[in-house]
Image (cartoon, rainbow, N blue to C red; front, side, top):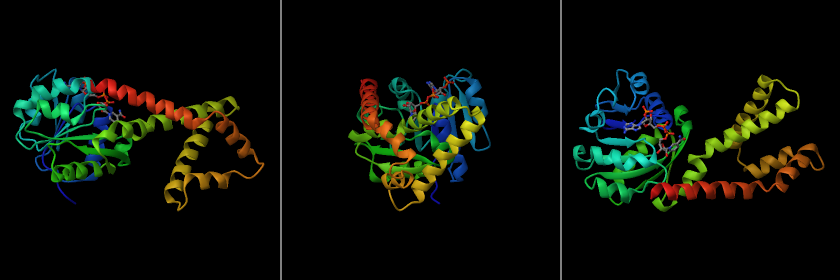
Length: 274
Ligand SMILES: NC(=O)c1ccc[n+]([C@@H]2O[C@H](COP(=O)([O-])OP(=O)(O)OC[C@H]3O[C@@H](n4cnc5c(N)ncnc54)[C@H](OP(=O)(O)O)[C@@H]3O)[C@@H](O)[C@H]2O)c1
């Protein structure tokens, strides 16, 4: 397995934490180790281990600068609106050629390159199944990133799942599908579970039925040599019960609802970019 240079992760919350867990579980060698930062001690301290050095800004206001000093890869895991200020604060310490990867929705590589022109800037859009090594990560290099820099970023994100390289102008759209996607799936699970409870099942019975159905269907889809439409057809006997249920879902125009939901997420990504 390839090795990676010293990694610095600034802002390790839900998404950064999922990447960190997946990265550690992968067993990939990170030369020089991993440094992580959070503002609060409460969130930074539990991340420390023999391979992870954790800085809490409340204890060490220069923690971000210390964490990036000598790092080969820097991952920015803060909220989109905080990326520019964070990058400004570390830019003087970044060595030329440092790979800076932002996982923030909406923030462009051009805006980051303007702040840290000596860095090789990459945008990544992972999703939270990274914690299990099951992420889908969209990857796009900025003008400053060479093919080798992007390959390094790919190696990093392949430790937590599958990587899809796309032109940067598709990153926001990708984010509305796979970045936000786990939330759509969990929302569907919540609604179907609620329906099961309304039909008289206990919360535990409902969770078993729905969770295992999603899991089983997803695994069947992955293992199958036919697509979802054919798999659905095989559950849907003509004039049967499922056909009636699907008819109701079709009349609600679920596709149109997803079109509207993703368009709304896309509009928000554009707002965050400004
Ligand atoms: N959540 C997802 O599924 C997902 C998917 C793809 C991409 N993203 C992107 O990932 C980024 C983070 O999202 P999230 O959901 O992980 O948010 P989050 O849970 O709030 O994590 C952000 C972390 O950044 C830390 N932080 C804030 N300011 C900092 C600073 N100046 N220096 C160092 N650390 C700082 C926070 O620490 P404290 O709490 O101690 O202040 C927090 O742990 C966003 O840009 C988002 O667009 C998220």
